[in-house]
Structures are given as C-alpha cells and as structure tokens.
Image (cartoon, protein in one colour):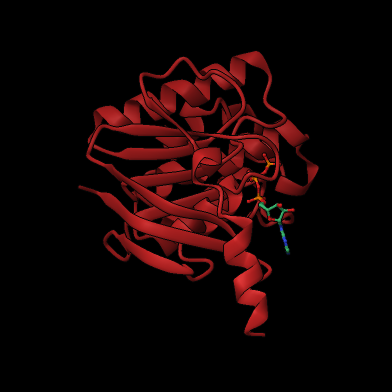
Length: 203
Ligand SMILES: Nc1ncnc2c1ncn2[C@@H]1O[C@H](COP(=O)(O)OP(=O)(O)OP(=O)(O)O)[C@@H](O)[C@H]1O
C-alpha cells in the first residue's frame, strides 16, 4: 500500500471533525472524498499531508510519498512558469519539466511570471507542480476550482496517467472527474458532538 489510514481522528481548531476513518490506497488507485461544505475533507487532507497532527489513529506512508496541492500554494509570483517548475524540480530532485508543461498546456505561458497568470492558469501551474515532485501519492483539495472544461479534462488525464504509472490519488472534489475511483463520503465519519463536549470538560 502507498497510503494506509487506520482509525484516524482529525480536528480543526481543537474541535474533533472526523473520527474512525480507515482506508488504504494501493498503486493505481484513487479515492474521491465527498461530503458537504465544512464536513472535514480539507482537515483530513491536511492531516494526511502531515501539515497537522492526527487527534488519534495512524497514517502509514513513506515520509516522502505525499504531494499536497491546495489552491495556488507554493507559486512564486515573480518567477516565470518555467522558473517555478524548475525550482520545484530542483527541490524534489527530479529532472525534465517539459512533461509537466505539456500536461497542463502551459508551453505558451512558459515565460510569463506566475503573478501575471489568470486564476485558472495559476491553478494549472499548481497542478503541474505535482508532476515534477515525482511523489507517488497526490493529495488534492478541490483541484478543479477555477479550471475551464478543457483544463478539467487535462487534469483528469494527468491523474489517469499518474495512476497508470503506479501512483495513487486522494482527491476532495464536488465535481465528477470521470475517473475510475472509489468514493468515500466523509460525513459518515462525522465526530460525535458528545466527544467534543467531553474534551471541553477537560480544558
Ligand atoms: N482554522 C479553523 N479553526 C477552527 N475551525 C475551523 C478552521 N478551519 C475550518 N474549521 C472548521 O472545521 C470544519 C471542517 O472544515 P474543512 O475545511 O475540513 O471542511 P471541507 O469538507 O473541506 O469543506 P469545503 O467543502 O467547504 O471545502 C468546518 O466546520 C470548519 O468551519
């Protein structure tokens, strides 16, 4: 397994949001996270990505397995598209950025500073960054926000190619990407309000 989550509980601002989460991703698998606004998808992804500690339970993955993408995080506004991708390729020790440029149709924008891109173009650059990380598990929070129909198609193709190469993906999205993937409604793991109230009693 590339990623295994065992009886995980996650919290936001000290308040338990989800509990009893268990799932695993093998090479080639994608899991789509569903759930209404505020149900805890972002909190789960941030925890899996190591940006915040779990409240309980275990996450098993190699320390350098996960690439997390949320919004336009990590883009350097004054660097061009090419310079941004080259920077990240160096950070992650990978080489050629050409496949990443091509996968997200960024060739014509290669010399434009990231700060001068439109919202959808910035998103495409943020997603292209995933390809240069070389990391096997993509944890993606609403990756298609701001993307037009063509770009959503490019993104779905990039995920399919990643899975075909033996990667895996955990994706919070409200839209149908047309991927062959399991779906998981996080709302079924909503933390019980009683647990939160009991915690408060100890504050
Ligand atoms: N910084 C914070 N401090 C306290 N509570 C927060 C914080 N950020 C989010 N929350 C709360 O934590 C809960 C889970 O939020 P989260 O962002 O994980 O939901 P989500 O499923 O990703 O929602 P959406 O579909 O709207 O993106 C929500 O009730 C939210 O209001």
